[in-house]
Image (tube, rainbow, N blue to C red; front, side):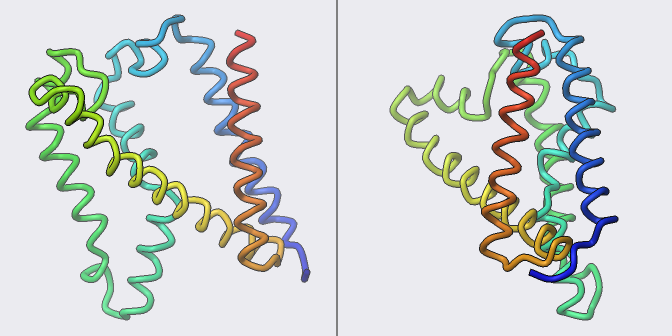
Length: 181
């Protein structure tokens, strides 16, 4: 274990506290109920919706991966395909499907398929969605691990374990504090 970057540790702690405080503030303003918790009562405006989608899609794995590709290829953003693909898919998806999905009050992207093709197809299509979330979570934990590795000079494996513990603790604290509301 090497030197600990105190400024980096403080920045990470402040960042997580800020996110936790904003989440708690938003939780206090929400109405109780399943739909309200999952979909914000279907009342998210364009500004909040844009930031929510950005926060959902743009994580540590995305940022670290894009920076790595741009740096390694030494040819700039032309080799970083994710930003362009993500942006294009969000715009096309929003223009083509958002209005219809809101009108029919779907909860997930799988609902239209399940409605048209049945529960078995919905269950089958759930498998790649689940695997995508698992792999995306692994990428986020690896990115958090890389950050922790740099900030407190731990090896990569231990850093990923520490980042997973932080994420679990952070999620539990947020759920407990929101549940007290």
